Image (cartoon, rainbow, N blue to C red; front, side, top):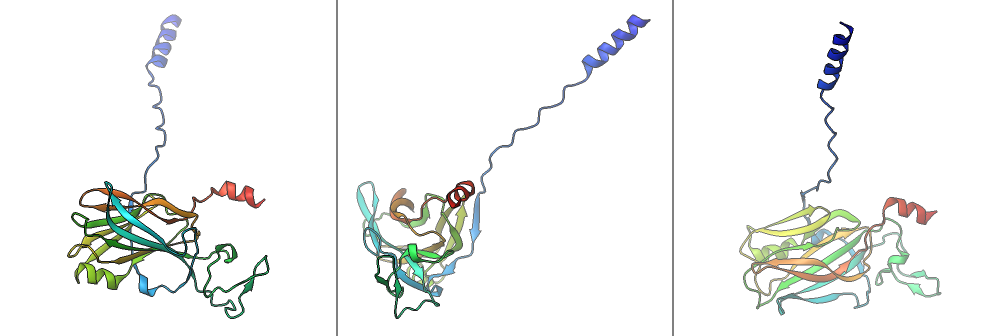
Length: 235
């Protein structure tokens, strides 16, 4: 009887199911998030940042070796209402910086918002319509302001136009959703704002046409440092 009880207990132990393994967490993408577009003419912009190519970056929109349009980009500082713009501010080398005409990011206060502006004009050699413009990198320091020139958009696309703006996994997207089509010679100004000044012109943008996609060069902010690295740097 004792042996039978032991065998019964052993069989019961062996028949108990093993606990199911816990699923490992998997990385998930945020997906596109629709934003509300702001009007370019509603922005109060100060002077432009003087970069290695001057205050503006001019570039051709190239597709398979031919120019299909042009883009003029620049980054503007805000208007400093509290600064004494008549006398300027003395820099470390003793020179005066007049913030009404000069934008010096190194001398801007913390939390300054920089406006990235892109004036895009399709060319005669573009086959089909220009469909969208986007960043191909995460928009570092994005200040949740993105938009376009509404007057230009209506003139180019018609009264019933629609331009959708999105944040897609950190990248910014402007997409023509309705209208008569963005034709050659019709300029539309797009813009976005960041808490970071540009590090220089880089291939960080992209256009989409009926033919395909092409990289675009323009000013872009550097990647944001992780919070741990920022704390270590400040220490």
